[in-house]
Image (tube, rainbow, N blue to C red; front, side, top):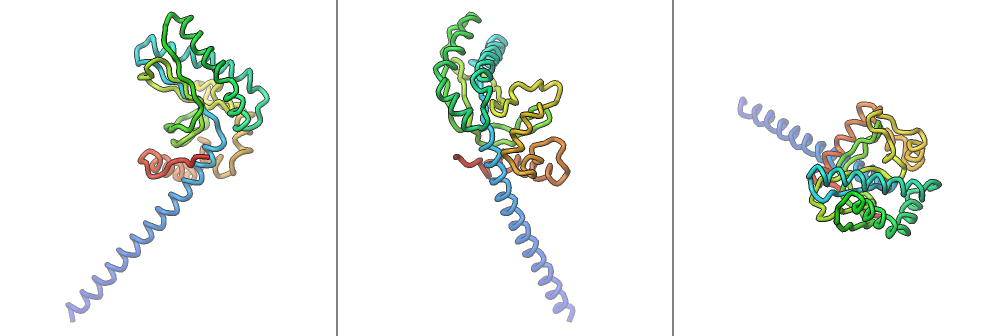
Length: 222
């Protein structure tokens, strides 16, 4: 009798374990599907800038910021009236030669002889904060600038909407930039990247960051 009761007990425990595993797998698959969709939507709404320094020396890192500043000034001039990511990409694509000349002239003015490689493509980005907005890790369309041997630390920002021009120390993103993001994302997606989001949204963001950082998902290419 005792053996029979133990078998029943063990059977119930086994069933509970199996059900728990199935629930975990269902939750995991649902979370991955959700995070893939969110990552893709966010990626499709922004155009980013990626500048790679020649090396990690103080001089090369300072040069990286000089190049960045001058490229951003030019981008702001030619994209003043941009209303969409695709428009910003189209304009940047038409002015790649100008971007390269500005970078080369900046490098020359600072006393260096490095070459520059500039291209627009879909590249991997880490999780980054821009004032009170945080963008998850993933693949994003971007203007990539490689200075010299491009062995130094990276610098990332968002060219459209113009989060590059945010004073990060103030922790505030201009309302017009937020509106551009809001118009491209669902309410939940925008809440996901806002640092004012609630606990549930922050938890989903952590899932998104975990999956992206461990290669379990990648943002979908256009």
